[in-house]
Amino acid sequence: MKRKIYSILAASALLLASCTGSYLDINDNPNAAVSATPELVLSNALNVTAGRLTHNQIGNFFGGYWAPSGSYSGFVEERQFDYGATYGTGVWSSCYDNLQDYQYIIDKAEAQSWKAVSGIAKVMKAYNYQILVDAYNNVPFSDALKGTTAIRPKYDDAQTVYNELIKILDAASTDLKVPISGANPSPGAQDIVYKGDLTKWRQFANTLRLRIIMRQTNVSGKDLKSEVAKVVAEGAGFLGAGGTVNSTPGYLKTAGKQNPFWETYVQQASGADAGSKQAYVCSAFFITTLQTDLKDPRLARLAAKNNAGIYVGVPLGDGNDDNLFPKRSWFGPAIIKSFDQPMVLMTAAESFFLQAEAAQRGYTTGDAKALYEAGITEAFTAAGLTATDASTYYNTATKNVSWAASTDKIEAIITQKWVAMFSLTGFEAWCEFRRTGFPKVPVATKAIQQKNPARLFYPTSEISTNSDNVSAQNVTSQFDNKIFWAK
Image (cartoon, rainbow, N blue to C red):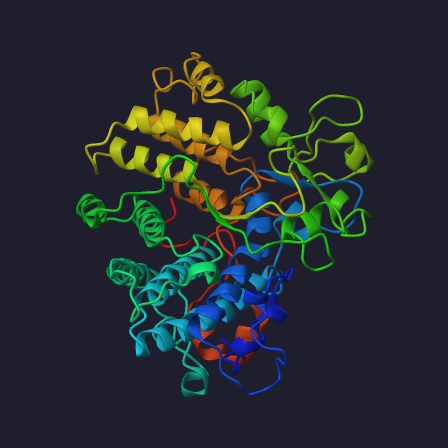
């Protein structure tokens, strides 16, 4: 891994779309050798985490949500699944650069016993490392984030990293339980996610920990039931109704300061279309699944009709003139709201579906059916529909909708989780597909092999600066070299 000496104080230069507010202006001169307090760096680090689009864009393609429209040429990687070490490199670089920030915060905050700030940074450290493992499998961990003392860091086994992430989240919860005081100040407004509400941070940490545990259902020899019990025993619970984890730094209708999703895919601050607006549309698989298989009323909220007044998507892999942007369904009003809509780190619906799966597998004594239906309700209300709409829907005798009508309960849970995460957390949808095989995302029509992608390749920057350690991973195929937890 390329271990450049990364300036935390100039981190805002890495933002996909920088945001406003004095708490994000880390210093006036990013080239000046000054220090920043950990809570000040926290604001920018959280903003960078939420503002990244690369991994979710990749997930939206490989998870079956999006397809390139026929209005743009290119997209060979997405249409053919033919990509190499130059594809998606922002996943690697942005995560490790962001991790440098969080490690800086942890080191500085712990030196002052500022447990609230260090606890938040530890949650986000685990959040970033899980993305890296889920994209690349083995990654530098024990030797990483050490600057020039480890310029060619060794790679740690992915399972080992996962085990360490559980420990980090454990430590985060311990920190977050320490009462706010003069000696342990609240981050307050510097925390652009929860404004210093440490109970909510504990719930986020618990839900992230549950995600990490449930990702390992295919791993032999793991006592996942006892691991889930430890999370439950932490006491704060999980993300609940209305508990979607949002980043709200204070977006403005100004170039570079709008919501990154909006500015990249919807509209520039000037009112002109965003450069990528017509590049991405709904896949035919997504439209058909909701319209035909699930008969899902959320379709009108998640997708838009084409210029002929119907819902129609692009088959994964296609991209000819028949699939020009006006002829295909784009994103709907639940996805595209305004220039200042929050960026989502984790949905509350995902929390309920994680709990439902844990209960269904016997890891908890929870009511799997009730949790499943609560997840659907949360997804409906988040999309702008009502709890009554949700109840009518999940009481319809349709496979993967009604609990009673679904023979494979895990398939139903994952399918509904997939619908709930549309466009918001696409990377997570791709991960769950690779873990469970649900929903059955088709192979792209022009794929070079009749397989779906299993991973990303290590980036060229890493190959050129840490070649011996990269070579030792023996990654030769994006289809066959799977992540350790994959099905």
